[in-house]
Image 1 (cartoon, one colour):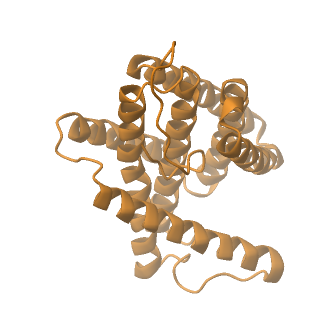
Image 2 (cartoon, helix red, strand yellow):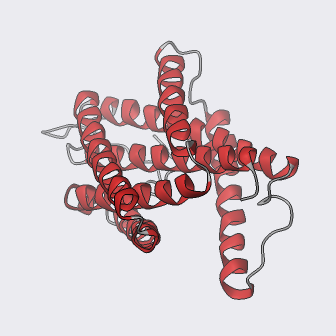
Length: 244
């Protein structure tokens, strides 16, 4: 079982445990974390919209992104903390979602709703493709998606460093041109394909009788992928609309 989410980086095998995880349990926890993040995100979005408070949106975006990243690292290296940190992680992700959605809404009205619909539809389609074994998480598939995800992460790290240190940007790929739109589309595709790895993670972990607490790891991983998908669609749709 393997995932390219920042939550999971290695394969583990669990056997003969008294209380193993179940697919149903992982799904229930995934739904719980997603609902928490969505409710907080929508609440924050409408608060910022009613008060026209852009500073709160920026603060929520930054705090949510940093807080979520830190908790993701903690659960990566100390998986036993996942049950305690799962809900705080969902809250940070909700803050990020609400803040970044309002920021994009101001500049590109309607794009957050379009990105939400794209995320929802893509999730349903990929789940159906996985369920009916049209797409399977083969070793080759995993290698391609993981390699592409790492490459994308490195590009974004370089972009962040350039922005913070020099106030510049990587030429072309973060601009509203065909190369930038193509890169954004590629990122959205890779982010979406991570769902297949997450579905496989849940299924494989349950088959290998992972401990009950591992359901929270699966839920965090799935939420991380959904947030990445949503943000990827936000960027892609905004680039299609105009300058980023």
